[in-house]
Image (cartoon, rainbow, N blue to C red; front, side, top):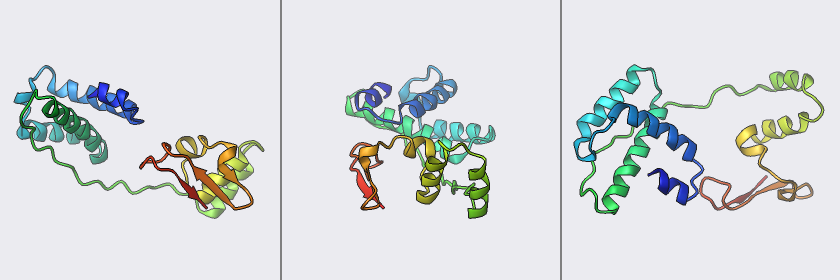
Length: 161
């Protein structure tokens, strides 16, 4: 499964590595044919008991689901267990109100203010979205930022206003 992520250039490889480490810690050296739906249920119960969010558990289960799918595609297994998706309640939190944003802005260096202002206006994430932009993507006259193919979730790219 990890080889598949590497070969296909998945940006979620680091997340997959972390998920696999948790899966290995629980399932150890179990044979795939011995990992059925009840065993997956025990995994979910244990992870929730550890205080792990459903969103994190879902990422781990997605890695397990992908591993089983690849094993079936390659003829190593004929069936995969039902691996449920848990309900997630991960609404983004921590947005700044305008007065909070302006208070923070007063304490930033001149170099950081434009970056943070852009992130505030567009509601983009600074590290994973804004810092990856390059000047050729910005059209000041049109008031747009072009997202290049391969940089968005659907890999298509798009103009943003």
